[in-house]
Every structure is written in structure tokens, then in C-alpha cells.
Image (tube, rainbow, N blue to C red; front, side, top):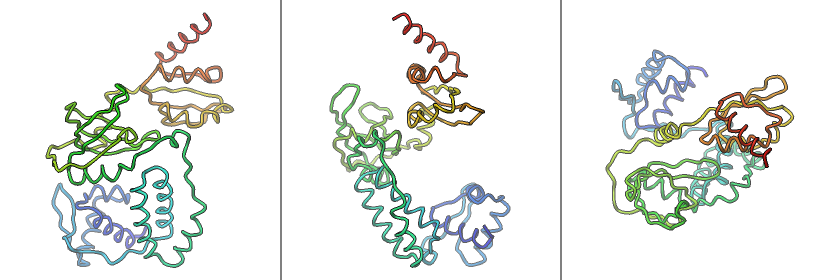
Length: 312
């Protein structure tokens, strides 16, 4: 990226956020902080009303707007790809809002880019897996996001799996995330006085109350990181024959797959799992064609299961 394009991109980044740190600009464009300062000074000299505060970041004076942006062909096709995922993996209201936004994006594209999107529309597809076909997000995503933005308490009618009972909850929403075919809501539950994970397909009713919460909650990423540490994830490394690897398909993701590398005729795979017992029983399906490298506790459990099978 040449300097002119980079400065234009920095201006767009500044317009898209209330405050942008110099370190964030440097990381995004792979430049030094000294270069960031020079580029920002160039913007100021060009008449862009920037405000900077040490330790906080840069912001643009309210009311300043860049003229309409023309998207590149690659950016336009990225929007189209995202649209396919949104249609399949979110809910009806989110899909509807995104289609409306896409119409506005298409409206400002040049004719060549519009034609490209029309030509590519049939060449991109997202196909749901068997588990995803059974997931129903109940059209709750936009309601939850609206409550988060307004800091409003949500009233939930929730089906708790552990008790098999329908419960009423008043919760302070923190964020939502997608994991293994399901959307989840992380919220502070006033009934339990603690943070809870609510799967959206189990929320049978939801409404935004007039109650505004003022408490500060951890960021969603911080909560997820903390939960992972509390669950004491176990690192598993195993090797499996190359001719068997293809049969693992999506099962590897359900068991905490992290990374893999090909070494001769075997794949070395790394996992993070919360259940040594569950991993051991999954491994038994391919155990005669694979080897556990670590941890020893997993090796011992597999041996115990195998011995129990022999005895029977």
C-alpha cells in the first residue's frame, strides 16, 4: 500500500471509531508509531479537524465527514461473502437488516462492481451442517444487541437444561458469540447473582425492560478468556495416519482442535479439551491408527478403557 492510499485508509478508520489509538493504527497497517505520527500530521495539514490526547488516542471533530467512499471490487466481494454467512448462521431480523445495508452498498458501486457481484452471487454458498440445521436462534439477536447498546435489562423466559424447567430471568446483557452451531448470550443473571451463558435456542421469550443497568461488566472477550482459564483446558497432542485423517471431518472441531502439521505419513494434531474422558472415548474410534503424544493422563485413561473392553 502506498502512502496516499494508507493515509486515506487511516482517515476512514478514524471516521469509523470514536477514538483510535496510534498503536492500533500502527498494528493494522504494519507501520511504526513514528510513521503514524507523520501520517496524522499530514491529515491535519490537509484540513482534517483531528483531536489527540496522550494515552487516549485520536478522534475527529463531530460533524466532519469524508465524501461518499467508493468500494474496491475486492471489498465488495467480501461484503457478498459475509452476506452468505449472515443468511445461514444468524436470524431473520439480522438477515433483513443486512440485506437493507447491502442494497445501500450496491447503490453506490460502479457498474463494473455491480456486475461482478451479480456474476459471483451464484458462486458463493454456505451450507449448514447437520448440527446447524437443528439450531434455532428464535430471532433474538437484534433484540439482545439493542439492549446492550441501551444498557437495558432483558426479561428472559428460559428453558434450563440441567433442571428441565422453564424459568424467568432478569439479566444484564454483556455480549453474544457463536460456538458449535449455536449463538450464546453472556449476561449477569440477577436471580443467580452471577454471570451465565444462555443459549439463544433455549430462550423461549425475550423483551427489553425499562430498567437501565449502570454496573460495569467485563468485556465479552475478557469473560470468555477467563472462562477458558477456569475450565482448565488440557493440551492434547496426537499423531494419526494420513490415510485416516480425512475421516475426522468436523469431529476434530467438536473436540477442541487447534492446529495440525504434516510429518511424513502422519498428521500431528493439537487440541485444547475440557474433558479427558470425552477425548479418550473419541480417540478409541481411531486408536489403532493413531498415537497420543501427550498428556500421560490421557494415555492412562485410554489404557483403562481398552482393558475394560478386553475383560468384557
